Length: 247
Length: 229
Ligand SMILES: Nc1ncnc2c1ncn2[C@@H]1O[C@H](COP(=O)(O)OP(=O)(O)O)[C@@H](O)[C@H]1O
Ligand SMILES: [Mg+2]
View 1: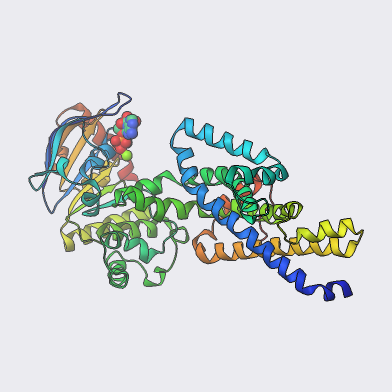
View 2: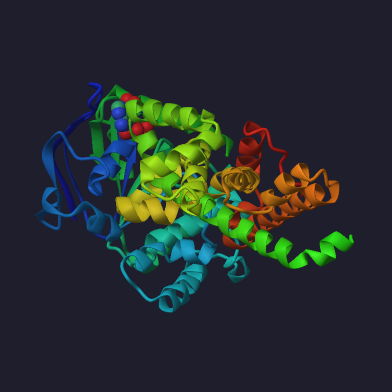
């Protein structure tokens, strides 16, 4: 379980990216932060693994304030998947997946063996193991990214618009695949997207943000659809609708 | 031809000496350029200062530097160390900008993602940033290698002998064959070094082959032709 307690973030240039965020992210469920570009989604996600520290307020993981934890160790215990995969261009698929276990001191052989198993989990052809990221399609790169995020078997998986840069057909495939993985593994997933359809599809709980990282509404997809808190919420949901009819 | 056969021992000896005089400055200049290049990228001030010093050092003519160094280093006038130090200074002056630019050109998204999965600063530098800067650094090392192999010959003027001895001796004796031996031998060493560097790059950076934009960009920048594919 991850708790945000009155968390705000103001960057040194004065930008208020997150204001007074107060919410609970339940364990073993998928919580999706959705909002338009610049609404503070990435900042919120990065505060969970201390890539960014809050200006005020505190964040707790299973009751422990992460402000007191060592950032590098914390990051190795949390999976992170980002847009455009963020894979290491000079490492093979297998070694990319094994990155975190290797950082944590696992033996190379063991780590690679486990990476091979993870390729199967995320639906990657085993023949791709020795390729470099540049030799993969966008969808394959994202699968490698997900496998890397899972490699150290973290409880928490942070995903920052992981499917934002792939075409709609591949995105739909990856979304289904993530749902299957989540059914099997039951991670605490914190997922960020600007796509309301994706948020409703994947989220057990959806947190809709307005500009400045202000929580507009938090709830299950049905609650947001049936009882939008205000016009901003219904407007944001409606703006996403016509696209979904076309799909 | 008979001269070459008759003097083969000396040619081989000076050739070998040429190689041994060239390698340390190339290695030392490259190695020193890594921390200094990183420092140059850190602050605007350090960048300006370091790159300016690099430019000025490179402009010092080599012969006076060879002659001057013994008094600065406390070495004997014939000590090969004078030449090594002078050539390291030139190598560093050239490599500094190449390495600084190479490190600065590493994709910020990749380093950010490395941080996100738990690379600490030190490990990220050696495991991610430096290897990814590798192709551009290598392009710089190739230039420095060629320039060092050629500059070593100047050492012959102050008695630190290499194949440069043959230009000097051949010139004094009006004996073209000997001059040609010096020139061709120097070029052969430079070409062999270059081939070894390219080979090392292929072996150490197999991932760099599909996209060669980085290497080509620097090669063009340095006015060197990109290697043929
Ligand atoms: N390092 C930073 N320095 C200053 N402003 C930043 C920084 N990172 C993000 N911001 C600003 O904070 C706001 C939220 O950014 P971000 O969290 O990236 O939003 P999102 O991921 O929802 O697009 C934006 O206005 C952005 O410009
Ligand atoms: Mg973002």
